Image (cartoon, rainbow, N blue to C red):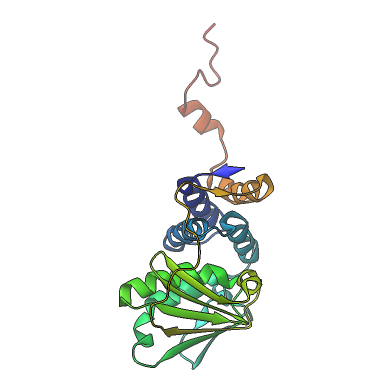
Length: 216
């Protein structure tokens, strides 16, 4: 099935809220999904994987401790949503020859969209490297070198972020929408539906129709 970029962003945002994450992160997750879709990645499936990873877990255990030399999470794996938010908050640390190293980030490809935001704020491209793949991002510009298969790993092992020199974009950008599967779309919708309040007798009476009154 094919969905528009607006549909992808809206569904990802609602699904994130349904998974219990705060509005701020939900907004950024919607933007992340759109960014991934624009670059031809499986945005719907990937965000679904991330929310499944978050489901019924204390989100604080998935957040990185940004005080140490290497960022780690108490739960072992860092959420890419939490890692991305932290990277944007601490992007100024990348000035000069400094780098940020994160250990064990789940679904690291999601971090690229947040890195693009941080790079735009710094007005400098950021190189994000894990395993055998290296990416450079700045806004919607993205270049990739190395093993493309490592882009979609479920666990990065270690991620290194550093300021980089501009490189030519090597990923096709899409303007109209993205391809996904009905299974992946329904999984996001499952989380999104959690945001809908269940109907009560009071809400039914307050809504349209006769409620429990028989007007016939």
